[in-house]
Image 1 (tube, rainbow, N blue to C red):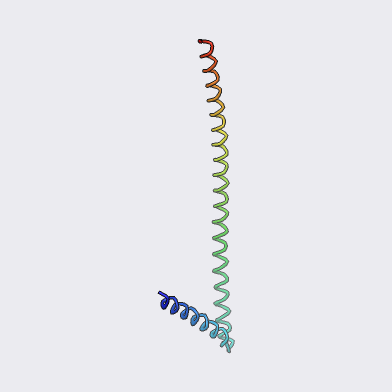
Image 2: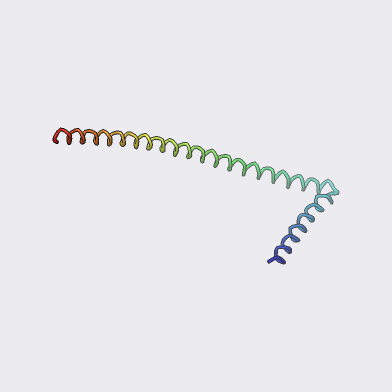
Length: 100
């Protein structure tokens, strides 16, 4: 596994060296135009991905806000039920004391 990891690292290094050499070896206007076109394509792709992620984040935040509201409503409802239950217990105890 160590040899495999070493070979994988060598492949990654070789790929990055090749990419660097490719950018360093741009000599003509045509090559520069192609490189610029590629970079602009990557920029557009990145912007689209950023937009999608931003939209997803906003949806998640809205969903989280809705869940928090529901949680607060449920807590309030629980508190009301507990208060009502305590009141019923008190009434039952009073009725029991009167009977005794």
